[in-house]
Image 1 (tube, rainbow, N blue to C red):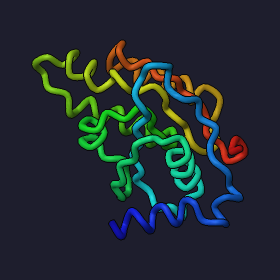
Image 2 (cartoon, one colour; image 1 turned 60 degrees about the horizontal axis):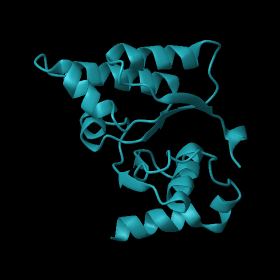
Image 3 (cartoon, helix red, strand yellow; image 1 turned 45 degrees about the vertical axis):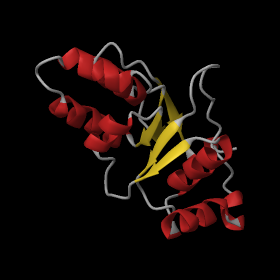
Image 4 (cartoon, rainbow, N blue to C red; image 1 turned 30 degrees about the horizontal axis):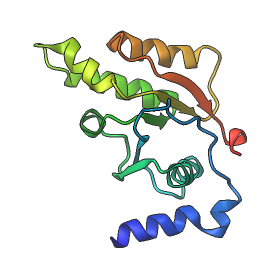
Length: 157
C-alpha cells in the first residue's frame, strides 16, 4: 500500500499537474475500462503523463517496475493500452512471438489481442516507423489491430 500511495502522490502532485494528462480516447461504449501496465519510474515524463491519464480516466493500473515491459506480464494482463518507444514495442512483439505455444498458436494470439486497442509510440519516430510497429503487431495475428499513434511530449494536454 505504501508503494501505491507514493505512486498516486507523485502522479497527482502539483508539479506533475503542469505536465497535464495525455489525451487518450476512451474505449468504445459497452467495453470495460482500460488496463495499462506502468513499468518505468514516474521520473520519466511519459510515464508520469500516462499515470495521470490512467488515474483520471479510471483505468486499471498494474505497477511492475523494470527496465522493459515484461512479455509474460503483458500476455497475462492483456492490457488495452500499451506504450513505449518504437524499439520497445517492436521488441515486445518479438518476445510475445517467442512465448506463443506451437499448438493453438493463433488462438493464443487471439486471446492476447482481444483487448489491446491502442499502442502509444513514444519519442520522435522517423517516417514509416508507426507503420512498421503496426505491421509487426499484425504479423503476430490478424487479431492484433490496435490503433498505433504517436505519444510525443508536445501532444500532452
